Image (cartoon, rainbow, N blue to C red; front, side, top):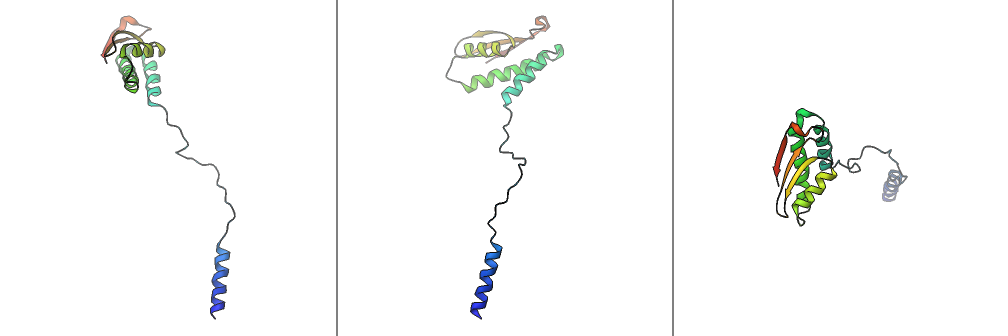
Length: 122
C-alpha cells in the first residue's frame, strides 16, 4: 500500500512539473521607460513662453529655474561664467553680471526687448 501511495505521489509530482518555457509578449514595463529630464522640460516650456508677449514673467521664472538647477548641479565652478554660458546656449535673452560667488541675470524676450525685463539674483 505504501508503494502504491509513493508511486501515485511520484506520478503527480512528475505530471505537475512542467519545465517548458512560456514566453510572454512585450508589454508595458515601467522600468524600461526613461523619464523625461525635468530641466529639459523647463527649458522647452521657457522657450515656448518667450514667444508670447503676455507670458514674459512666467518665461523668466522658468528660465531662472533652469539656471538655478544647473548652478546647483555644479557647485564647484564660478557662478557668473556658468550662468552666462548656459543662458547663451539656451538662447534666453538676458544680461548677466557677477563673479564666482553670485550672478544677477536680467531676463527679457529677445523678440521684444522693450516689453520688460525680469531680474533674478543667484
